[in-house]
Image 1 (tube, rainbow, N blue to C red):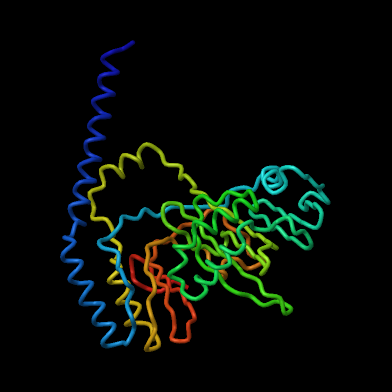
Image 2 (spheres, rainbow, N blue to C red):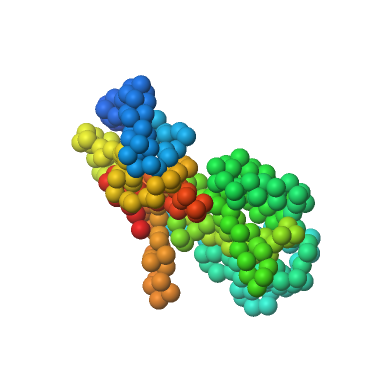
Length: 325
């Protein structure tokens, strides 16, 4: 072994590592603001929007600014055999064609990017603890603040009924739907890949009837896409001492929304959280080819309840404060 060459390589590696660590410390020091200062600003802003705009602020505002690294994502390929094995581990059906699976009143439609489950007649796909789950759903329908509280039991109940994995899925909303005089509950989960992702192309949506039977499931899953970078780009990033673009604080996002959007007096801001924003419905036009990968935008998601009890979500670009469509 050429020990002289190995020693040189180790020295260069340590120099690069030290430079990287120094850069991170400098960036951290630049972004550090005393918590007491945030608390004082938050109090002034919340008093302002309550007194001047008659809009009730959220019970809590995130303190400080969390670092956000934008990522490229794309769809995770659906493995047909894996989905079938989860939904029907003991009672396999048959493939009607390449993309449709059938088993005793249950259908599974699969393509490369998503799958859709439809239950027409089977009563086997019911949740076990129906009364408890229905009670929690009623609480969440009355007040979206209950969503985080009821999420664990709802995730476990659906996991047990479907055998699908709900790890990394965040309960986002529960809505009541009436179809042909039948009442259904539409339960929406979004992904968490470091931060929650709001993306029209991917989510898990479950439809359940009043008897606790799951009648439909739609799921498409995102995954991070690694960017191919050569050694020159990596080293350039390590030695990049230019000021980084900083995201706005939750307080700034809150003020930007109230000032620039006409919210009804008596509205309540139920929640504000940092998240990612991806594809919109306009990106999913039928004759438009889906991109293989796309960039996520960091956003502040604000959930607003109108005086009539309706829920509206706003997504503010975490760099500019502008509302994303």
